[in-house]
Image (cartoon, rainbow, N blue to C red):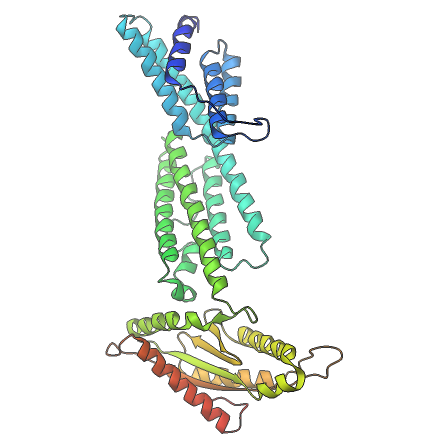
Length: 428
C-alpha cells in the first residue's frame, strides 16, 4: 500500500483528466436526483476508493461505490470502463517518464479493485433483481383482471428461480426449465388459445425475446456448472436477461390492451372484429393437421319481447347471464364472441359435428332450466336459446379467404334458422 500511496497524486490527476465536469440543473438534489448529478456523485465515490490507504477504507469505500451505483442504475460496464481507463492512463504516463519500477504493483492494485467491485456488484445486482421481480409480481397480483399478465407472472417466477439458482452457488441440476417450449410461459405461447394472436407483431416480438432469453439462460447454467465463472460475465448475461424479461412484460402489456379493445364491454366476450382473424388461423390449422373444428351460433329466443316487457336494462342482464353460461360450458381453448345484439358465436378447435351438437344441446338445456333473478322486485325470468352448429374439415384445395369464412358463417346461420323453424330451444 505504501508504494501505491506514492502514486495517489497521479491517480487523482488521471481521474480529473479523464472525467468531464458535468453541470447539472439539479434544483433539489436531496429529493430528485438527475442523472448528471448522480454521475458527479459517483465520480467522488470512485476517487475515494482509489485513494483509500487502508484495507478497512478500501472495503468500506467499495461498498459505498457499488451500493450507490446499483441504487442509481449505473451499469457494471460503466464502472469497469472507468477503472480500466484510469489504469491505462496512469500506466501510460509512467511509461512516458520511463518509470517502470512499480508497474506490476500498480497493475495488481487495479486488478484487486476490479475483483472486489465485480464480486460485490454481482451480489448486490442479483439482490436488486430479486427485489424488482418480486415487486413486478406484487403489481400483477393486485390487478383486478390479469388477462395475459397471468402468463407473464409465470415467466417472472421462472426468472426468480434462475436468480436463486445462481445465488445458491451449488450449481446442481435443479435449475429452471431451459427449453423455451416447455416452461409455463412457453406452453401458453404454443397453446391453441393464442392462435388468434399469431399475426400480431407484439406476439412475434415476444416469441423472439423469449427464445433469446432462454438461450442466455442456458449459457448462464452452463457457465455456472463449469465452476470457473467470472462474476463480470454473469453480470453481463443477467443484465441481458433482465432486459429481455422487461421487454416481454412491455409487449404483454400491449397485448393486454389489444385484448381489452377486442372485448365486448357488456359481456367481456370477444367482439366480432377478431372473428375473421381467428377463423383464418383455424382454417390453416385444420389444413395442416387434418382435424375438424366446429362453429356454434346461438340466438336468444324472443329477446325483443324481453326488452319490450322488462326494459333494456333487464335485457343486458340476460345477455350477461347467457354469456356466463357459455363461458362455464365451453373449454378455455374455445373462442366465444358476442356476434351482434343477442347473437353469440363459438369457435371450437379440435371438435367434430357430433361433439358440437351434443354440447349445443346441453347449453340449451342449461339455459332453459335456470331462473334468472334480476332484482328482488322482479319475478324470476326464464328464457331459451336456439343454436346452429357445423363441423368444418378443410383440405388443401380450399382457399383461406374471406369468401371461405363467409360461406361457413352462412352454413351455421342456416342451421340456426332451422332450429328456430323447428320450435326454438333446440340445437341443429
